[in-house]
Amino acid sequence: MSAGWSDHLVVRPLTVDDAREVVGWQYGGPWQIYNLTGDDELPSAVDGYRAVADASNGRLVGFFCTGPEARVPGIAADPGIIDLGVGMDPRWVGKGHGKQFGSAVLTELRRDHPSTPVRAVIQAWNARSRQLVRQLGFAECAEHSCIQDGRPVAYVVAMLPVSA
Image (spheres, rainbow, N blue to C red):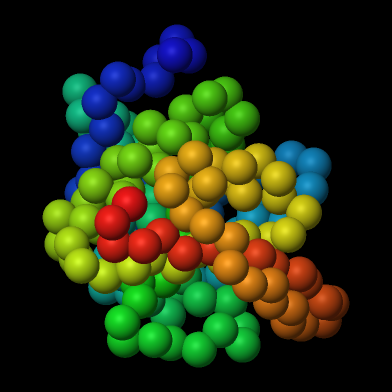
């Protein structure tokens, strides 16, 4: 594990301070697409956002959202599926913590929704995230394209069955 990374993560409500921190995160390279701008609304627990934090000190390491906030344009809501979106502090991205982070998120979802499949939609170019969802038990099942910010974006749809 990287210095400063916790061996134990907890999920808690996303606070306003957490949301402000998330908006300040800046990803490099092609991941810049995930940077939020001042025009974006602050993520909110009311909108289905939860914080993933270091259990020992409460420090935010990432977040996840479910429902409408996790869906990309053109993906229909399905009451029998949980739509999931995640974000990790860029200081930890690419350092081997994704599986632990994702497992903390899925443990929380399974606690609250033990018999509901989970859907994740990943930008098609993002091989690292696609590999992670496969490691977590998701299976890629479809492709999806839409227009975002005036340009076409290709996605891969991945499903996590109830048994995973």
